[in-house]
Length: 177
Image (tube, rainbow, N blue to C red; front, side, top):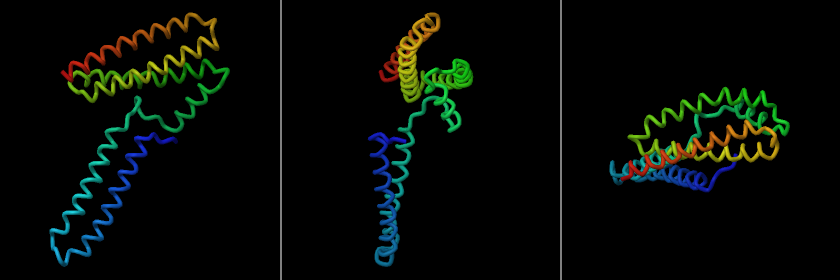
C-alpha cells in the first residue's frame, strides 16, 4: 500500500508526539520528587497532543462508500483487470456494490444541507465516481466501440453525476455563506 505525502506527514507527527509522550513520562518519574504534581503537566500536555493528532488523522481519512474487504477487493480486481472482462462478473459486482454506494450517497444527501463536512464528503464522493465513469467510458470506447447502447447509458449517467456535483457545490457555497 502506497502512502501519500499527507499520510506520511501525519504518521511522522503522530510518532513524534508519541515519542515525546514516552520521554515526558520518564521526565515525570525523575522530577516528581522535586516538583511534585506540577511535573505531570508535560506528560498530560503530550497525551493531549497525541490524542488531538490522532483525531485529526481520523478526520482526514476519506472513505469512498463503505469499506471494502480483502475478498471484495480481489473480486473487483479479477473482474476489471481481465482483458476479456467477463460481463457477467462485472454485472454481478455492480449489482452487489451499487445499492451500497447509493445508500451511502443517500445518507450524505440527507446530512449535507446541515453539515459542511457531509457536503464536502458528498462532493468528493461524486468527483471520484465521475473520474471512474470517465475511465470506464474511455475503456468502453476503446475496447467495445460497437456497444453504443451501453456507452450512451454511461454518458447519460455521467451527465447526471455532473448535475449532482453542481448541486453539491451549490450546497457547499450556501453553507459557507
